[in-house]
Figure 1 (tube, rainbow, N blue to C red):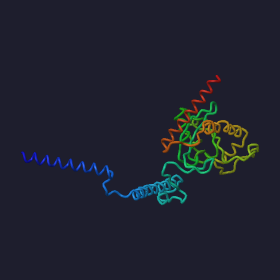
Figure 2 (spheres, rainbow, N blue to C red; figure 1 turned 90 degrees about the vertical axis):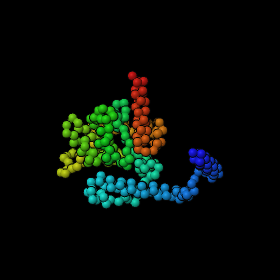
Figure 3 (tube, helix red, strand yellow; figure 1 turned 120 degrees about the horizontal axis):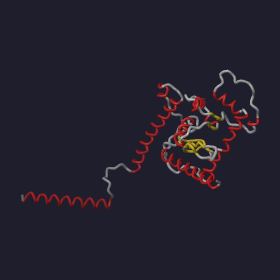
Figure 4 (cartoon, rainbow, N blue to C red; figure 1 turned 45 degrees about the vertical axis):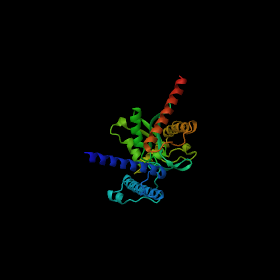
Length: 278
């Protein structure tokens, strides 16, 4: 027993000496083991891992794009990224988009506005660079966020596609169909004054052709002209009056929260202003 106690004390003393030596060396040289990779090599290896991950994401986006364009599963599997396709390491979910000041890295903010008080009744954020696929999701968001299905929709030519126009017409119940007034192209100066050509549409006319003819009628012109007094002022107030020119957060979920807060603030201010004139 005495010998065992002596050995324990000697072991404890040796461990204490080793711990003290480690602490002294850590104080002089830091806590590194000595077999770590050089800092420059660590940085390059980390970068290489990120580049490989980015390559996989860009390749998957190319396959998803091919699928969305209606290509077969085999064609989508063989789809390759374009040379211009890019990946942002700071915010991978964002995309390069065309803005008022040129090409920017960002998100596509969506907002639907009702015409009476100019309240935002549907809002979201997407990473899609254009609005061709956004009409159906926006209709669903309006129902979800405002509790009411729109009776009519005014939208610029960015939302014009056969798929979007079909969605407005294809509701199984007639009362759920939505009257659409969607521009089919950019309107030239003075074009709204031209009279629509009389007569039936040619055989095989597309939904876009019918919409174009509709917007040339007296009623179509009057209804679509209201868009300039509904949606555009809201975005103008957000960008100019409140100075919101870019998102401050990163990541789609955080950006969606930021945009939702902005839209809520807009609605509160609109309601406050309406109450002042009652």
